[in-house]
Every structure is written in structure tokens, then in C-alpha cells.
Length: 269
Image (cartoon, rainbow, N blue to C red):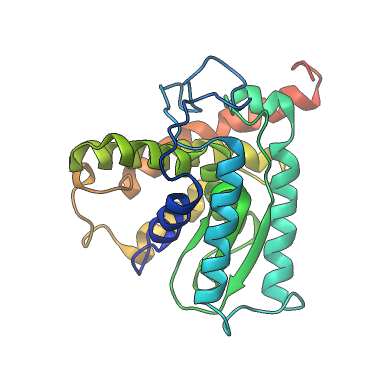
């Protein structure tokens, strides 16, 4: 998503992964981490992973400790309304992610993985949120008023949770090891962002949220941040607002239809 400050995710992630998995080369689908054909990720593309499920969990835990230390003193207490609101949404989305027919629909490979969904809200003006491997999350208070309702905030959180569900951090580790040019790296990052958008919008109706609110939220973000200051999409690690909104508008009805089919028993449970 658009960020008003440099995203700290990669710094914490790779520092943690370097300690957890130094010298390891874990093939995709090893250690029980594949539900489908080896190497096929949620975007139906080949996906090489650099961490086993156990290493991914430890990397997320280690990075999360670094994050909490970095923002010590600005973390809101559990009793704060903002925290309770965010936690409620995360819990609903996490339950949705456990629905096996939904996992098959969006081709999630999570068998053998452990997700420890935990979130901290940090008092900071930046419009940002992120999810580390295995489900540790940070939400900055700047993003909360941008979402006009709970469903729009769910659109943000489901997108970030999707990065963990799709093992995008592990994929980045594998990519860093193999090397590659800047444009190739940016293309992968845009692919990951689009995958997270799609997974997130499918999670929403299964968690009880209208997926159309994701479209509304990103239209609002486009108005707030504007397109004028963005670099061309081919040089950006995120899809343009126009591309993102177009994709979400196409996926939202499909996500709603999938939930309707599930409710009516037309999808094997």
C-alpha cells in the first residue's frame, strides 16, 4: 500500500532471516509446506521459497521483537479503542483464513505452517501497516482514520495478512539469494502486492466484510495521495492506484460469489 515513509519491513525481515537461516537453501514445498503442486504460489505462478515453515516462524518472531524494541514507548495499550478495533478485525480475518474451501479457491499453501496472529498498534502519523512472516503485525495509527469504516480497515489488514499467508517474505529471501536485476525485483514485488490484494479481497466476505469496500478504500487513497507524485508503475514496487482499483473491482464480485456458494453448500467443505 502507499506509504508516507520508507517501509521498514525488509530491514527487519532480512536481518532476522540472516540469523535464522544463514547458509540454508530450503526448496519450495519442503518441510510439509505445500498444499498443491510444488512451487506453485497463490498467483498460480512458480514460487521459490527460501525458508522452511519452522524458519519462517522464527524469522517472524525475531523481526517482531526488533519492531517492538524500535517503537517502545509508542505502542498503545490493549485497552485502547484503536487496539480493540484492530484486534477484532484481525481475529475475524484469521478465522476466515482457516476455511479450507477458501484456501483452495485462492491456492494458499499453508499445510505445515504455524501462524501466530498478533498485532500491535503504534502511535505514529505514517499511513502504514505491515505483517511479518507467520502473522506478527504492526498497524500505525495514521492509517486508522483513512479507513472510513471497519470494512475498509479490514481491507488494509487483510492485504497485509495475505503477505504472510502467501509466504512473500520467504520468497523475498529466496530471491535475494539468487540475485537478479532491479526491474526483475520490482516486477516480483508488484506481483506480490497484486496477490495480496486478491487474497485479501477474498478473505473479506468470508470474515463478514463487503469486499467492495476494498475498492472504495483504494479510491479514497488515490484521492488522498494522488497519482502526481508516483513514479511510473514499471519502476514502482506497487501497482498504480488505477491498476489496483481495476483489479479489485474485478475480484470483489468473484469473492462475494465464492462466499455465497460456500454458504449455500455448493463448495465442498
